[in-house]
Each structure stands twice: as C-alpha cells, then as structure tokens.
Amino acid sequence: MCAASTPARAGFATSSHSSCIVPTGVTRYNALLLPKRTKTWGHKHMKFVTSLAVGVLLCSGITSADTLIHAGRLIDGKSDVAVTEMTIRVDGSAIKAIERGYTAAGADDNVIELKSHTVMPGLMDMHVHLTAEYTRDYRLNKFITNEADYAFDAAKNAKKTLNAGFTVVRNLGDTFNVTVALRKAIEDGDVAGPRIFSAAKSLATTGGHADPTNGWANHLMGDPGPKQGVINGPDDARKAVRQRYKDGADWIKITATGGVLSVAKSGLNPQFTDEELKAVIDTASDYGLRVAAHAHGTEGMKRAVIAGVASIEHGTFMDEEVMRLMKKKGTYYVPTILAGDWIAEKARIDGFFPDLVRPKAAAIGPVIKSTFAAAYKAGVPIVFGTDSGVSAHGDNAQEFALMVEGGMPPMVAIKSATSVAAKFLRIDDTHGTLESGKQADIVAVPGNPLDDITVMERVNFVMKAGEIIRYDQYPSQNSP
Ligand SMILES: [Zn+2]
Image 1 (cartoon, helix red, strand yellow):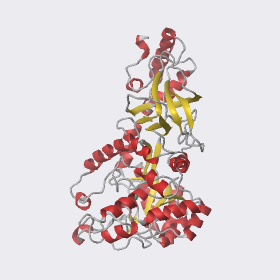
Image 2: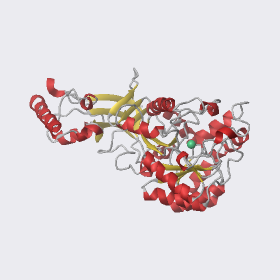
Image 3: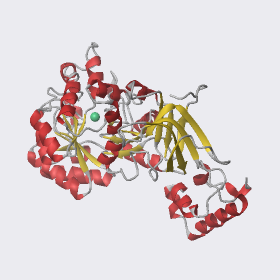
Image 4: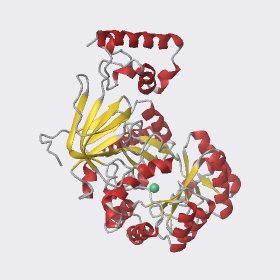
C-alpha cells in the first residue's frame, strides 16, 4: 500500500479504488473518476495528477482494484432469461466485464456478495414529480411553501427514489424549476439522487390541468402566461417552450387534456388546439427537446399523438384508434397505474379530495389498469412510469406488480424500466443494461422477481456510477 495512493482531492476520495492504477488506465482513470468540474483544471493540475499516478505505479505494481459483485441471479436488461452465478466486475464508474461463475478477488479487489439476490441494471422511472407529494393539505401548501422548502423536499425525495433502486428519472412538471437545480446538484455530487431529466414547469392552457392558479380565489388568480406555463395560441406556445429551454429543461411536458387532481370539472376534455400542439412540438424540436403529453381523454390524446409527442402519460381512455396511431408513430405509453390505483383508493376517504376532484378520482383511477392491459396486448410501446409524487416517493417499484397483474410478464416489466427506458431517453449507449463499458448503475433484490414480482419493492443494494449507495447485508448468503 502506497502512502501517496489516495490523493486528498475530493474527486479521488470518493472513488472506490483503493491503491493501484494500471499503466494504460491513467487517462481512463482521470476521465472516469474526476468529477465534471475538475475537467476544467489547468495544465498544472493535470501535471500534478499524472506525476501522482506515476508515483502510485512505481510503488504498487500494475494490478488494478476492481469491485466484484457476485450475483446469484443476473438479469442484464437485454436478454429474455436470467442467468445464475455470475460476477460483475466494476472499475471506477463503469462495468469492466461480466464473468461466468464467482470470480475470486485479487488482493486489492472489493467483493460484494449478492449470491442470494437477483442483480439487474439501475431502474428508471419516466414520470415523477420530485418537488412534492400529494396530501390532504396539498392545495393549501402552495400558499405557505417557499422555493427553498420545495428544494429541500425535492432533495429528500430524490434520495428516497435512489434508495428504492431508481438511478434515472424523468421529472414531468415541477415548481420554481427546482428539479433543474437539483439535477445540477446531483451531477456535481453535492446531493444524492438519481440522474434527472427535467421538464421544469409543465405547459397548460388557461384553466387547463397545469394552470398553476386553478381553483384559487378570483382576486389571487391573476393571469399567468407562457413564463408560468400557461399558453393560449401558437405564439404563446413558442415563447413557453423557449422559456423552458432558457430555464434548462431537458423535456417539454404538456397537459393535453384535463386531469384528475386539478380543481376543474373535467378530467377528459381536450385542452390544446392542433395549432398550439404543432407550435409546441415544432419549437421543441428546434431546440432538441421532446414532448411528453399528459392525457386522459381520447380526443386530446389523439391530437397529441398525431402532432408528434414522444409519450402519452396515463392514457386512461386510450381507444383502439389511438393505440394503432401510437404503434405506427412509435409513441410510447407511460401507464402510471400506481397513480390511478392510489387515487381511486383515496377517493373513498371523505374529505381527502376537494368536491370537484373526488368524482374524477373515483371514475378515472381504476380505468388505467385495464387500459394498460389492452395497450400491452395491442403492442403499444410501453415504458415504465409511476407519477410518484401522487403516490409516495420511494414506492415507485409498486408499479411492477400492477403491470404484472395487467398481463405483462415480469421480465418485460423489468425491461420497461431498464433497457426500454434507456432507449426511450436515448441514453442506451451508456445505460439500461449490464454490459461491459456501460455505466455501473446496478441494483439487487433479495429473491427472484420472475417468481414474485413484489421483491422489486425490496431493493437492498444500489450502486450508481460505481458508487455504492446502499448495501444492506444479511447474515445468510445462500444461493437463490
Ligand atoms: Zn404527473
């Protein structure tokens, strides 16, 4: 062990490497382990790093310290079958190799024993709202919650989400653009959380599902515009999309129809004209952004699919024509069955929802599961998403059991949250499967989710970019 082997700089201190660096690995080591901001170091710093690395080589030989994960069962996110007794070799932030059997550790290697577990790629949720969680007091909270309060809540919810095994999320609608700031804080390593793709504040039309002043007293309502996410006409639509680009959004979210939880009469009516949809999608495409459309009612959903949105969220009253259109255009369906289930359950409690919301919740909630079943049967592309923030953050994996109840085989459900989600987000070159060269986002559950899908709700090992986030060890490590 060489005294000079662990540089005091923060970027190195968090590395899982212990002491040694392979000669050819010097460049790769720098690239993989230096946090983003250190890439802007001057020449002098790089010289310091290089001479330090050479010093390490001289004193500790040429072996490299890897982390070996002994996986009792491995689901790689790509293949249709699981394999047993495998080793995942992790080097820095990346998967270096997948090896058959339990590879014996070298002197400097770390071993993680997950022989009684099923190990799989980090999970991805395509529909969350990290800034909030719906409660009975949800409406009043808007008037007593400050920007910083939202930010701290979002950081807490991000941590819960990551601990539940979700290493990537798409945040579809937030308050004060908090998830854009949170995305940066997570990228910089200041806060623990999943990688975030953020739509910042959603877009609605006046009185529409994401009009932030719905249900307020008239004297407080004002007249929110494109900056606040409310558009009327193509000019407003273009301005609102450009504003989100300026705010740092990765996606655009629109509320193409009414919604369940907004204080408005209909959850189904179409809320964007064809001209408005075209303006949103054309402008978004100019800026390299794609559009996600919240939709319950058939007409608004159909308009959004024809206009070219990338995904339909909830899709409650999706009919055969819409399914056909989605298949043809490659539009993904994000079911959020969990949100429907949760809402239907809460609608039974007196006073939980405002009077205008309760009947919508009771009527719309239970329909989503049967829509999901029909859409899966029809071959609509489906990607995993929960609408967490309606239900509690950290409960995201409950969606898997609901998908399986809706007729989707467990392996297909797991893929919808791994390789399919990565492809949908266009990060499949680095994420979504366990393969050499991919980022080491790895989770494990005790037991076999192909036999009992509910074990997905008991993730107890999480690694993100090679860093161990949680590793709950159990006395027994028997083979599964
Ligand atoms: Zn939502």
